[in-house]
Image (cartoon, rainbow, N blue to C red; front, top):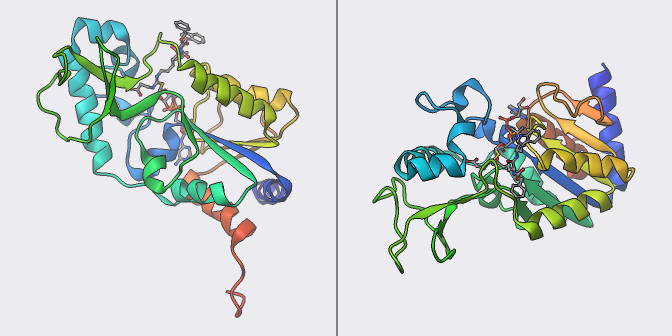
Length: 254
Ligand code: BV8
């Protein structure tokens, strides 16, 4: 019962919201069939993601790290955005100002049509020359050769993502922090809220007095601080909210 009351209260707050920010994590892509970072299916062969997504792992074995990214790229290329991704894309034209801040590197939000995105951790479809720093987009699945080399200088390419222990792009995290402190409502969808500095963004919204709404089938370390924690899947709850806010009831009331 309280679930419906919370949902109704969230819808009410969204009706008057002018500057909305949505922070997403790998959970929003779970219903697209992409393993979450920490879910059991998130493991690859016998490695833990946290051990491979590091500069040390890449220095030790660029081939092994690229094989992992190539496997993930192949998986992601075969999946599609779902209704939850599409609702967030549509909301860019529904609220006065709607910004999507994502921890995900899968490119699903862009494929769903989102344009106003801050990709905190980079994008798996981009790679960067380790010598020149030039960034190129590459959609090949599978990649060949592995590891890929820079077409200009022949140096090793690396995934254009932020690994554990690496700083985020200063401009990106600065804008994300600013928007989180200025918004009048923040949705936090599909994240375990443990990876920093992303996990601190909802706290910036709370400090600024904005309501924080968590959408997650499970509780997280953010749950006790969130104004609302809607227990459920992104692909169910986001379309429900969208219908209540923006769908004109049909003549026959269906
Ligand atoms: C930095 C790109 C400093 C790569 C990623 C101790 C304390 C605090 C911080 C640290 C610490 N020790 C180390 C740190 C720093 C570290 C960190 O936070 N570590 C964590 C593990 C404690 N952070 C960093 O290293 C960052 N850099 O701090 O730099 C610095 C400064 C200056 C100079 C030098 C250094 C960099 C962090 C970025 C790492 N890169 N990804 C790649 O992906 O290959 S992070 C990775 O985790 C993904 O991006 C992922 O998105 C992200 C967060 O995970 P989630 O998205 O939350 O996914 P998860 O699986 O955990 O959870 C899924 C959730 O979805 C669950 O809650 C589940 O219930 C829910 N869900 C499931 N199904 C659904 C659903 N929700 C809705 N609907 C569903 N259907």
